[in-house]
Image (tube, rainbow, N blue to C red; front, top):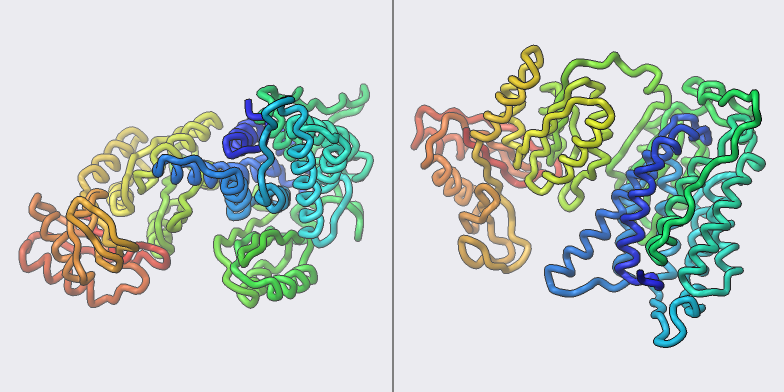
Length: 558
């Protein structure tokens, strides 16, 4: 096993941390009583790490294509950036800042194992890791508007303290940090009254301990002993989340749906430092549990408020907020009765999201370069609140991600059928024949048949010169991709679209579906409809708007 934190060790750390949080997610959720007893800290940490792991894998995949190996700094930065854009909840946002703090130091340079003496003598690497943990703990505290002891912040500080006192190599320093974090975690009930009343340790701190344990395993090949909370004294019953009340104004208590801010608001924000400073002050007046992490123009904002609209408006004034998530803390208590069947569809634009939602589907928005993680798909399946779910990934690249999500949902007792739709137009075709009142298997067969009978194409603009199946394209050329392969290269969107339609209709068809991007004029749809009528009188055409961030044009032929 590597004894220094090189790129391979970072990759292993990320993977092992995700596995550890996956194993402990439910237990961590069950002990989540601060700052809100909403039972999702383990899930939020898992989703945050899943985003980090995807970013690290993307870096390795890019280098493997060129026959090289990424530098440690590239892997660490990717891990931190992935966590930032995928951070969920209070603890997930803080974890993203901890990773960013570590990346600030670890990307300054690497410490290689000496040729003689072994990694155990690599004091320089150990000191480097200790500085990274100290930077992480400091940045995390700065990101929280009102830090509270007995939380993940205390555990992070204790890990940094122990690492600084180790004066050892990288692996030994990681072991010391983990031991210090474990000791601090056990002490959290004595620091926070709400934890003491519930008889639990801090959920966020326990998640961080799992992440540090994965770091030890990545560096040594041996996982630390699993954390086990001290047994409750005889005769004391476990305290349920609904038993936990507030500690009063200014107390370190928790709340239920009728006590304290009603909404959790999270969004990514593109803004400058000065604008974010003003945003912090404004959000601090609006609510509590404020955490703003990030830097270099990209931030993740988390706050609990009563006026969710005001929190989003504050972000709009500061810069450009996106990936906005608003959760009502009382939503679980008011959840609707479980329905028999639901559709979960991944869509590439807001317009299609509205279209699919009107058809009764629960949607997951996919943005260019930011495919949804399996955790997001599982979350959407849960949100659908159905006994049976049909999952439409609508992207060939999401095949494995969707399969993993389906498997996890099945483990939770949901009957899931995955229809391997490779494009949004195939998903639209499947939705068009969906009938919730017929037997599940029959519905899935009909939807699968409709999707499979739909040929698909996409028009895109080339970003650089490259070789394609249709020849050499230049930057700015319009590419017509049929079933994923470049079939037509043109200089004009309309002419290229006509050429693509002509090729697709050579094999016949009854219905053409056109999905226009945000900036594409209606005149293009009119021209393409006329083109279809001229050569194929019996073929109908339907037009939809894809909305922001969708491709210029999607085409389906059934």
